[in-house]
Image 1 (cartoon, one colour):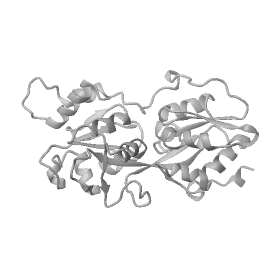
Image 2 (cartoon, rainbow, N blue to C red):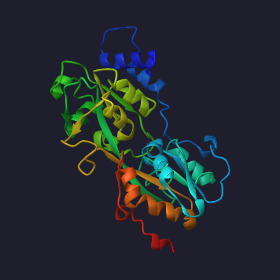
Image 3 (tube, helix red, strand yellow):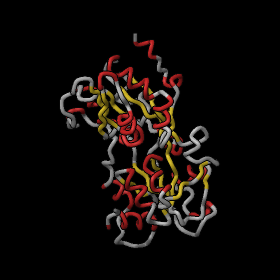
Image 4 (cartoon, rainbow, N blue to C red):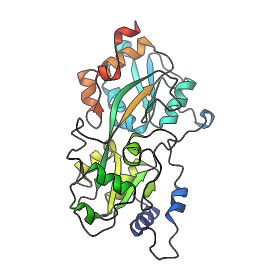
Length: 309
């Protein structure tokens, strides 16, 4: 449920700079209040150990909640490993995944940003899926699609009214999470050339769940959020997903707003890892991943079981 604070922040985003109200705080001050938006580089020592000691044959995942909610929990439920081996899943963010694997309290750490250029670039890793960043609005908004260039203009504050997209004479309140500010973030690269210069009319929140909740309630909202979190509300009629360059997130091969989802590890443990990754890249595993993410092939992931022998 959105709080009164969420409502006020949305109202401020709709008003934008220059509203003439002396009692409205500057949006950059709001941005500063929300600056600790997770997925930022943190020392390993301040990330708590969330897991108890391993059970025999247990394979543990911790990291980006997009991958945890989008695939790994369902993969773990469906997986039947040898000798009763199982997978346990905990969410978090990219830094959680890196730190817990380095410390040995998790076997697999999930990242929603590219491994090269991150704090994990010296670790072995596998690409397991691709995230699909949906562009969502209120279901009563008449706009059905945007182009990549129009979306770039909205993100940069150069296009500020829905009428410029064929909609109503209403201000666009872009709702985004300032995601992975210390890493190379693929969608930020597509829209802002990886610079942090989001529109000053933007509303910056702490969690993906806040994006879908706020946009589902305010007609002027435009959200950028993982399809993992948008899909249930779109299917329930509480959100509307816009086409981008004519494609919907469900058309993964043609959809332009994507980013890699990877797992890192310290060393390859063939007895527990090979059966799980064989399952993950199998037709049954990729069908589970395809529910809300884009699967990748073994060729794209460079996964060859024989190379571990």
